[in-house]
Amino acid sequence: MMFCKPQVGEIITVMTQYRTPVLNVGLDSHTYKKVPVLPSESYDQPNSFRIPADVPYMDVRVIDLKNVIELTINGKAAEVIEYEDVQLVTITGSKGNEYTVTISQDGAKCTCIGYSYRRQCRHLGEAAEKVKTTVDLKANSTYNVGIETTKLDKSNK
Image (cartoon, rainbow, N blue to C red; front, side, top):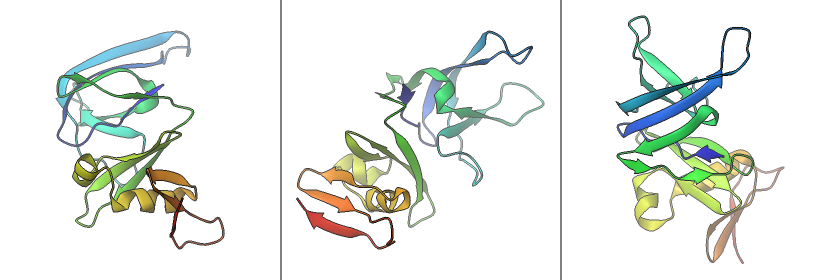
């Protein structure tokens, strides 16, 4: 299982679980309460996010979603998605903002404000092109991306 990625500026409480660094045995968990999500860097993995560090020798912590076992975003439980069925694709918007498109068997979702209102945005097509797959984006349309072409072909069902 995996959680949807929180967006920059959202206030989260997150519990993580990692292998214990000493002898690599057992699991070590930690909870970070009511921390803001910070902007990502270009070299961050698409399935990770940043929060302020709680120690003086680090500025930020980079949290990988595969290590998150509990997550609340702005006081509400975050949506859980199956890890094996999911691809996360980071798309840069027209104004430089980064959005995460989640592609699963159920279709695709985007973290942009346009998707939250219309359930459709250009980032979905860009993500489909980037991963070279077919994604059911809307009830009556599918974006098909061929392996040998980089052009996006929209065809009706």
